[in-house]
Image (cartoon, rainbow, N blue to C red; front, side, top):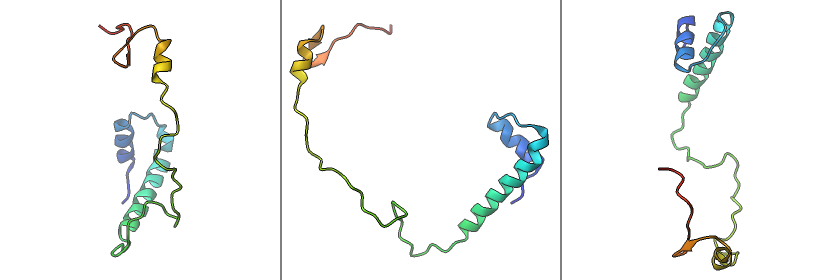
Length: 95
């Protein structure tokens, strides 16, 4: 797919980008190259290819999903100016 200078101007307008008129032909060439690459990639035969979450055959190192910190809510709320039913009360800042 080949983009024209007019296409580049439309794209720049839609993206609210200011571009120099002297660079338009260069942008058209670069963007056309990107679109050609995407078109080539779409032609690749991917039948039977299993989707993967990572390009390398690695396992994720995850920690165990378990509580490691002690519950200190009462300790923190003891020094808070106002609390109610386990919540911190703060002044209303938006009407």
